Image 1: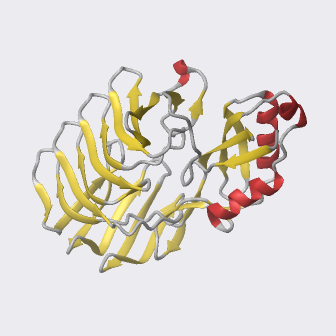
Image 2: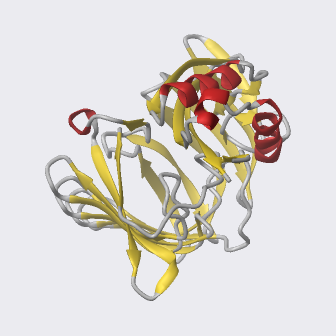
Image 3: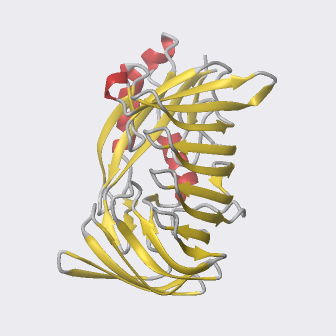
Length: 320
């Protein structure tokens, strides 16, 4: 058989699956694991009768409560969400309601506090834009405190935002016409820094962050994901050019996909490469071999500060 490589990048691409139920085990950070007991939640993907292009995605916490209900155009671990998506806290209370198009949030999203009160209503653009600059691309319609008191109404007021776990206020500032305006302040306790930012008509004019006594300045965007030089297409080309189907695997009709996890370091180096989901030792070794050859990436930034970021890459080895 002729070897055929199908490559997939977890955050942006996906590879085709088959019309059958698939089950995957994941950690909170999205890393795949083989052992159910070591997973934080389980993802099940089921086909929809009469619709071969859409699948039901259900994520379930270890306590048995639903984590997410959504639809995907891919029956694979790298889901591509499409349509309505509802996420839940471990208690079973709704965390958010949103809509996806091509795996990108668009339109109105409602998010809730762990007590069930509405936290905020925001609107994402529907232009389908996506890049590694993940500055919050949304307008704020409404924002409330945990008791239901309105802080922002009809796109106007003083916004108070929380970290993902609602443990502390991580940013606060003025909202005008749904956009950030004037001076904003915040902190990130996980990475240990504070920041001050100046906005005009929703655009970040200047930002200053302080970590361990060191000051960082930035503008335009305050969050940037790591990126392979040249973007996702260039990364896929790098894999395509360098991957070699193992001869023994080809002779013995061995195929399947390998999921690798790795860290993009503060200096852009790729490190801590691991097999999160094994296909076969021969395929695992080849997938790791090529990823170890990866050139430096553009590092991730949080408010101008370089940070370590974990990624996952599914690589599918198929024979045709």
